[in-house]
Image (cartoon, rainbow over the protein chains, first blue to last red):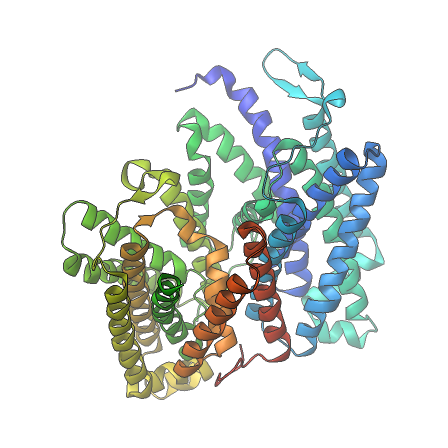
Length: 295
Length: 284
């Protein structure tokens, strides 16, 4: 059993893992909040982000800024294509949220087989070694990449808060989420706002995918476990609440890492799934969510 | 070739039990159980563990159905009361919890290594395939009879308008739990038959990739139709077998990826353009 001395290190590790979970969860939650379906293909976008970043950086030899921007552009295109060819036709025929959820899981699996066909099943590593210095603060160490993960996550969450609270787009998104019919009466074009929502989710997916790719190896079905963690974070934080999903992500990241004090490291997954089970049974509305109605 | 075709049919009969039982909850009762494969996996693990510890298969087989449906009944009892997406969310979460338990409860399941050496029920594959046919036949007959009985009509009334069914004096809570219990019983039976066929059970049977194949069969065939489910299983299996024989020169890994891609595309097209599938009675 590890000693309590490593607690600061575990908290740092937890915040880093939690930031990536929060990026997965918030993309999932933004779409759920505005469009009311469970957006599992966000995991697909994250895996596309990781692989595109790998391709631009290591296969084509671009510098990391150009590679990052191109990856974001690529993820936006992929997300909009999924909206135009899958989600929009489903909305047109008034498909239930269940159908849209199934379609998004199907897209997730489809993407993993596409990546397998293009890149093969062997794991890939994004090499950024020249930027990866380690800083030692005595009670914990942190790498430059991990610091940038934290910074990017914080910047994106600030950006999201700004969009939601301070812009007309954010107001339209909230109006649509509250009542689509009323929003349309006051002149909001839902399809336009949905496109913007997907673009914001795509940016989160791209950045989340790149950061995930820096923290771990790349493999074709990597989008599945990360969006499961995003889903868990989002349920724990409160489905339908974007700030809740961020809190949920950090909570799951911290619980998994600090839990190492009490359980063997192999039990990380068990911790997050036990947290999910407890929340599903006793607090299905999550930390910040609205209480679900009983029949 | 001969052995391969026997395997194709063996899988078809196992899939028929899974898909028809999922249809009972999803199609006939309107309960979107996204964790159906968790019950299938529970059945498979139960049967594998029991027979590896010396229990004969004719006890392990019904036992796996009973263990699966006990879990099913308990989970349904706490969740079906809640409205909206909640049932979906819990059952999907359940599928993910099943992965974590099977991977990490090493003293019971040996984790990712899985449980090898699950004994055959019948050594000869051809005769086992006939045995699977018999079990699938009986399961389908039972579910067909059930869906046409009074209970089945109540299931469908709940799916179409739960409030109306309640006003007519039906205890909708009881019937929803009953539907999930029966559905998960057959999922457990199918899991047991599967375990004794492939002789090795590991956590990958809980993977989403496996579940979407079952979903594809269900949705391509059509909801609330037994004959639809059977045609869905045949459609997907014939498609998969055809891909196997059509592309013998490509590496198996790439064929697997292409097969999955095409199957997912077909499923997306059905979801968008033909939500009733081949023979469905209601839209997805």
